Image (tube, rainbow, N blue to C red; front, top):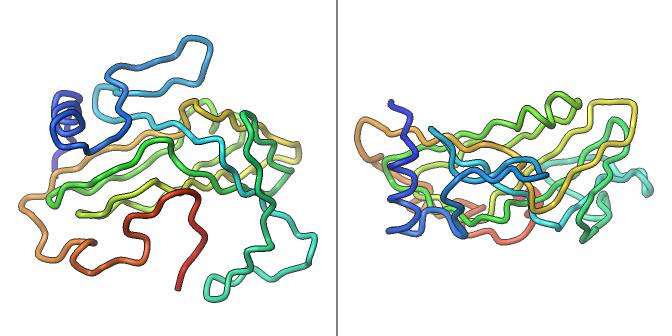
Length: 184
């Protein structure tokens, strides 16, 4: 597997719609950086957040997830309570080529504040807005800034196209738009 360069990412984004909207260079004027980097793409977080709450004393069950475990907010700055988390989504819509696997890492600016970004790999053939989990590991409230960089996606080329893609399997998160809760 090889990591793919800015040149490859730009070509796929502009000619095949792999990332929409696509920002061709890093933007960082007074914000957490986003856009194309040397070997990745720094995606932005959209202003739609689902902030975890325990008001109803719900049990977190991935097989029977209670939507009332979250409070919905549309805001430019999301405040995550101490030792809690929020779900959000990328501004960008991704379309992953059949011979590529995409992994995501959090931005160092957030990591240095105790905020961890978690995303599972984007499988070959998957498309949609990426649901992001922001975990606040600190004992203090933490801010997430909408329309600014949240995480970096790295594109890895497989040695050949996969036999069965996410699209072929009709994966449960295919084509997701908005913040998507767990599905069984």
